[in-house]
Length: 156
Length: 310
Ligand SMILES: [Zn+2]
Image 1 (cartoon, rainbow over the protein chains, first blue to last red):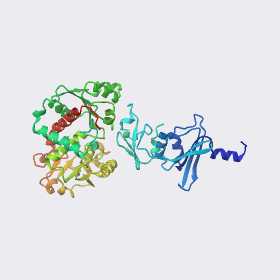
Image 2: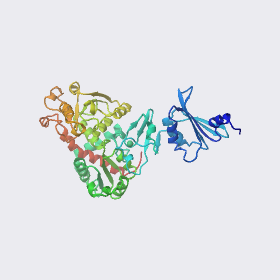
Image 3: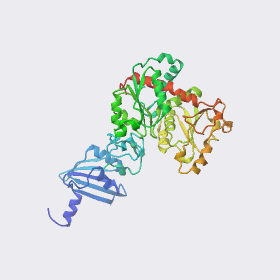
Image 4: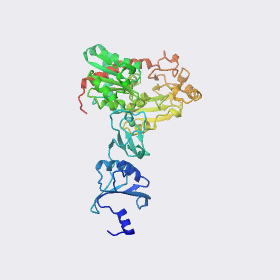
């Protein structure tokens, strides 16, 4: 490959093998990375475009992860904060699979309950579990409903 | 009942409720018939929060079925104090008992505990969550006094923190009931409960009010709960609202002669003692109904023997 500005542009827009998560709501890209547990410490090559103009959304974010294909579980959880996202699996620079996210019925062990009186927030050996509602998520144990700021509940 | 555990009244269908109430009525009519039904069987009482009444009511119910209870005792003297998890505690006690009753300060505790045990577990209160056996005895009392068909009920007091209120509202939503919720604005039903009630399939209609006057004449049942002083940041604020939600003979002047007044007890000053001897008062009867209703529940749960046919 040649050097220079063109190459730089190419490297941001194309990945070799991995996943492109497109049509993420503007400002949610870092939460997407948090959900996927990607913080760069493993040496992953990650490109993030934030607040890019979009036809479908006023402003969208794009996340490109080199060398990693998302599992169905990851895509499920992603749907909670990025319901309009499209997932593109890339192999050898080609998009081999393109799909929309689909909201799961339940997410387990991913979000922590915001209710301090909930049994899942203590020292019990229990994973959090949330039912996915049409407009939020609900703790299966204490019943608390969260509509806004689901991303802030992501367990780290 | 289709369920091995009784965790929330939300899990109960109209048929479930009617089965339990019918069974309770049979037991109430002829307690002798079930006196030996569960001889030799043990009920484990796990009360992580003090509750003399509920605990005694379960204990009496089990003994009247011929069984006995094992009690983990006070929290101070137990291994819980040493940091044992609830998940471990229930798995240990499960080894001694044929069924468990759990009262715990944290919401969702009963649900979680039920996932660790094979014996039936009854939620006897989990924080601000649920208290379904109380709901069953409330429903039993309503059915005896006013009937559950075409019911107009006023539920008044602290609707925000009152788990008995939430449980009752859910269970009533299986029936063709008009539910009026009467409270100061700061103690209204949690929005999540309102959301749920709107989601439920039954024919229930709910309305919220801040005073009782306009609805009182239409009520078949008035269910009063305590407004707790400690819920209010300052005493003045408490004094302002508390008086408006107290029931005495004068308050009831516009009530129907058939009105049934209920209260989960203990009461402080929500209902004046002058009501006690009137035909309105059903709260002591309500408390007594706890035993046959809990006998019915335990009988049915022990009968199912932990078999999962869900
Ligand atoms: Zn919770």
